[in-house]
Length: 462
Image (cartoon, rainbow, N blue to C red; front, side, top):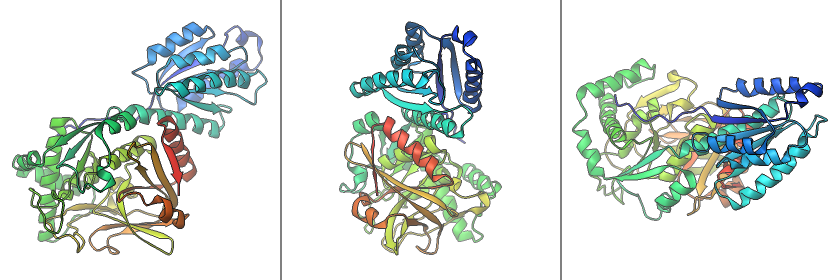
């Protein structure tokens, strides 16, 4: 199997402890707080570089400059007063910075942090490369650690997105779709990923280079992963045809160093009068990406939603499902898609690999897909929008589950929306949305809000 590009999931963070070491000798309890803070920072499992306590602003600025480039974010921890200028010095880091302070202590930590934060935020208003966050609270307070985690995950996402590369296979689909209403320069400058277009003829050529052994090997991997495969020969043959397309996509991934793929599922402007060169639905190429997580997949040429799935993967640790809103019935949003990531199921035994089918609107070719059975959970429904990719509509609700019977042969997601009227009035801005089940809605929404703040994306709740 191809060895695909890997983007690290571990935040790489530099930490500067801002403190006059002489105070450790004279201020009772300060040394203990420093030790507990270091222990807390190290407990989170980040890739860390820690600079020992320093009070010289020039030295702190030099440390911050040295970390620009290889690090996702820079954290300054300020313990006492008389360190406002030193706190401001972490602004020499070109990227997301955060200041951690301790408002419940009597050592004027908050006063110095506030002055430093005020300066840093003024600078960030003038410098698009800079963003600022505040972390506060005792290092043994779970809420304080979540604030730190929130900053680190958001900074890591910004950092990791610049190392992603999305390939659009087969060109755009429907000029009027928001999936086509963007520019590659905007994608890269606003969201981070680089981008390349790959002609469908290259995928057709790669189909001939997929061996029978590769197909057999992929089917065996799916079986060994304890996923349910079809019993009848006809359906299994469809899955094997899909495996061939998926493996051809993987060949292109390897050649172009792609971490994401957006497929022109049909190859032409009219699915009913199919004009694509593949002779089959391009969703066949999603099989391995969805089932085994080998790549982030975007359907119907939607490069922007492919990027949004990448954002959620880095920020929240899971690739969400991309689906079309189909109908809202008594406050329940039903959304349909060909298939989805196996990682959204509670385990491989809740994942079925099936032949699937296209709706009656479409009459093209084969479709072998991954059906995860999504359980009850809170739900985040989101979509990046706008020609400048500078806003995101976000709705919340409750996942009632998923099935393949409501829309026969397709994956149907069921979400009871918290505010269905707001979604219908302001949230209907495209045909693809990111659907993510979450066990901690408040935590994950806080992390999403932090990410959007760092990326200068306005959230519109609906």
